[in-house]
Length: 344
Image 1 (cartoon, rainbow, N blue to C red):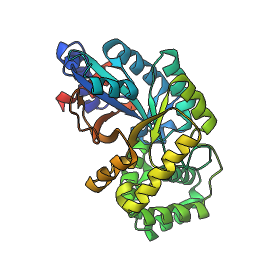
Image 2: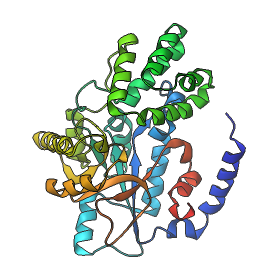
Image 3: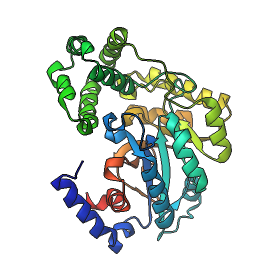
C-alpha cells in the first residue's frame, strides 16, 4: 500500500533531518530507554491485523540495533546504576538502554539472536504468572477472537451481541469487519483503547463470554523459564512487570504488594539474572504506588511516558521511555526522527 500524503511529508522531513548534526546531538549527555514489545518476522501470519504499537519487524529491529550501536553507547541497567552511583557518565556521550515488556515468545526467537549477534544486552520485564504457561494477555485474546470472527461470518452476530452486553459499543466494534486488511491493526488499537476504559471486571467478563462462545486453540504466547534461563546466562536481565499483569491503579495497594511479592519471589526461585527495576503494567501508577516501591528495594521504575532522561538526578521512580514500533521506525530516517524528542 502506498504512503499517505502525511506519510510522504514525514518521510521527506525524516530524510532531511537525518543528516542534520542537531538530531542526535540533542541526546548528548542523556539516557534514552527504548521500549519494545514484540519482534516479528515479515511473514508472520496476520501481521497487518496486530496492533501497530505492539511490534517491530525483525529486519527493522536489526537496523535499529545497528543504528544505536553506531551513534549511541548501549548500556544495561547494572552499568547505568554503577555510573549513576559513581558519577562516571561522560557528558558528551549519548546512552541507550534496551527494554522489552511482557516476555513475548518472539523475544526469544527473533530479538534475542539479533541482540546476541551484536553483543547487546537488554532487559525484559516479566509478568511472572504467564511465564511457562499457555496464558495470553487479554488484548491478544480479543485479537484472536475478532480475527476468528472476521474469517467466519457465522460468529459475527454472537460476537457483536456479547460486546454490546458488556458495555462495549457494538456499532463501533462492527466497523472493524469493514476495514481493509491494512487498516485492521489501527482500528484494533482503537477498540483496545475503548476496552481499557472499562473496569477490569468488565474486561475479564467480556473476554470470558467471548471465549465461551468462540474458543481459541491453545498456544504459547510468552517465554518459558528455560528460555529465560538461557537468555540470562548470556546477560539478558529480567525485571518485574507484576505477577498477573493487573493494572496497579485498578487494584488495592495490598494487591499491588502481593503482585510484587509473587513476582520477585518467582524471579528469585528460578535464579535468573535480575535488575531491581519495576515496569508498571500498562504504564499506570500513582503516588501511593510509588511510595510502595521503596519497600521492595527497587532502584528504579520505568514508565510509558515518552521522553529521555538526564544523566544526573533523574526522576528515578518515573524514568521515561521511548516506545518503538514498526510503522514509525522501519528505516533509519524514520527511526532517527522518532527518537528525536526535542522535535515534539
